[in-house]
Length: 112
Length: 115
Image (tube, rainbow over all chains, first blue to last red; front, side):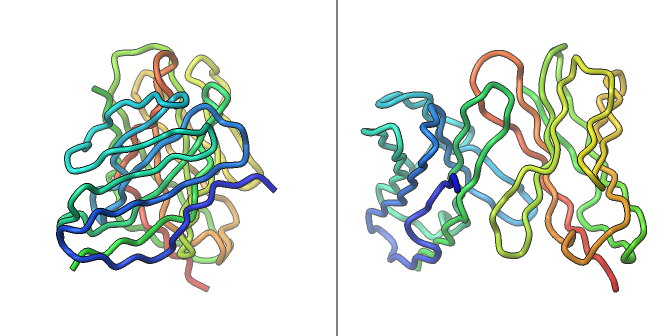
């Protein structure tokens, strides 16, 4: 059963901490994505990667960075967590042109 | 930039009845893909149905079908014979035919199914 796995379901961090959100896919997909989901705002793209060590900014990259050292793993990094980064974070991957995404289960991050 | 609008933040339907969720989008492109995703309360987002813009025939997946009106830039989702398990957030999404694989999502419609 193919899947996208996000390492944490719930996470609570303190303001100013460096936070790592991990995402692993087992489908050999080239493309991987990080979105954040907020009520009333839908899903907004933070960063995406179309190959190992390749990345592109999405619509809201400020305060975030990413790392993709291996094809199967795409990490989202909050350099210095702030309370306005409290959100649901969704990782996704895709392969075939226009085939759509496979999503992870999400990480609910709370920054206190 | 492309935008996707879902004008119904919430909808409700009686079990076994039919409901239609609306989606409009703005683009200057002629080739693209459109998607409907479902996010149940357990949170995992799953693909419901997809449509290629060059295909005139509306996509269908079992009880789910779309009404794709390219000229009107409209892409509505019809759920027939609604079931309690259809209760979820539904997101409409757009993807350009060329360029990257990134999707642009609408803000979602919360569907409640009443027994």
